[in-house]
Length: 355
Ligand SMILES: *Cc1c(COP(=O)(O)O)cnc(C)c1O
Image (cartoon, rainbow, N blue to C red; front, side, top):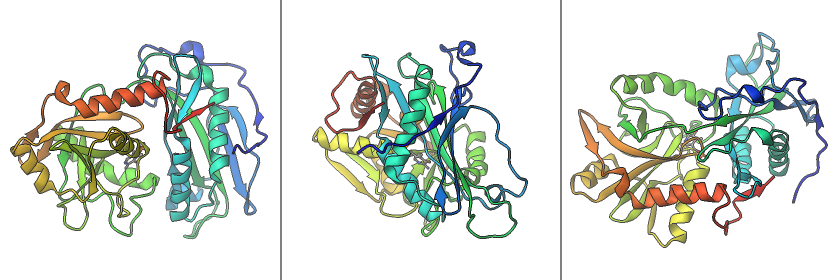
């Protein structure tokens, strides 16, 4: 079901690819040669273009900067051992992008078109996909309001863009997270379920307080009672308790519906592991740590894939978790997802899009 769209490509006259230190790629600081741009005006999407990567001009009254109609996505492309270029579950990102658009009164991009635009840019940038194991080409689609107007109403014009970054590992070590019981990431009826730019700006201040205490990330709890675990940074959170995969359910609109977490849940079920998607209390995590039934905890997200959680800060104590080597499920699921993207194992689920 592939949409055929004509996309004008203007190649760069001066590739930066030779200047990249491929052995030491930082996350999100190296940008490939091209970007995709597609404007919305007069009630319709205009033709998409791929142009040399570079700064964009903006009007000082551009509405996204003032009133925050700005959303994004994140996914990865990899090169398989057979030399194919693959993208992991872009249809899921396309669907979530539509949800974010709707929540923010922004025009939606049909799923097929979104996927095709991503595919096309990756095809143009395929030489930018790092070959080193665990490295990928990170893909960042985003949409923002461009009306030149001071006043609060949905913009009538928008710009959709995609750029890509060759990236290394997001976290080089297991993470320590701090249970946050005062600040709130998302509340019911809010925008926590959408990938809205402002959610991340709002998280910086509480996250900095956590970092000052030596934690990488906060483990957010629900805004009403602060007694239920929700998610962490840009990762969903999973626990293994008594041999079961336990993870906060996404029924509320306070948790971002992650593609990585969904894949972890589907794999666990596929392997016959019991899965509980439900409300998870802070109290039960503390108790399970105490009685030894909490054997694994990890964050799941595109940037890090699986990030082991070494320690969970709770008030004035630390819950110390079992050694990384002992974590059979998280290590297995991480390796399987990596192998799938590297084309080393089959894809029985249809998750891999070949470019
Ligand atoms: C992007 C994101 C995630 C992870 O989603 P993936 O689709 O797995 O990358 C989790 N939580 C938040 C808040 C996010 O922004």
